[in-house]
Length: 283
Image (cartoon, rainbow, N blue to C red; front, side, top):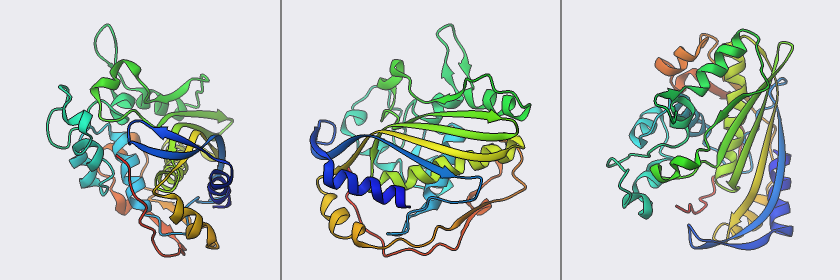
């Protein structure tokens, strides 16, 4: 939580204004931020200076794991995070590759579970990673990569958090996640939850101990219509103690995550928080 607030304060004090062509808004921006989450000691990085809807973040992660490409499927899991980009992005609405309402195209989990091979067929990156880690194998390339420039035109949004690199030291599992761009007031509370939860989940289904999760953000920004709320409201609040994140111990495989797992299989205990803040969202 303190890492999050320090980054917000850094942007407010030292950020530079940058025009964003996609949204038509200015962003107060800094380059490079590194956050660390102590999954081994159950220090769940859930924002407490405003109410954070962690269930939607976990639901989105579960949809990525399943390789979903439709906003309706994400809604069924418990999140509406893809509704706007699938249905309100003007460039995507005019795109010949869009299949219709709620279609997201070849983004995020689609690339992770079905990366197209130039000679035909697909590569299931995530399954290879899970199988290797379960056997205690780390070839120093256990990387889940969502960033496929050859298919950017076939999806509604380039991935922001685009790489997850798992590493084994003995029986302890680590994660390095890289994010090219981050809407700090709105997106980062989701992203922190997802990085932490991804390591915790993969450690559980591969039979490993969870270590640290390292989260690198390249471009961290606050949109101009979010600045006042961040500076004058959220940054003036004192954080509460971190809550704990619980996973159903019956989740033991990738197949479990693909089939029967729901949000009811995850819980957060001891979550104290301030009032919600309605930050504007930029499509």
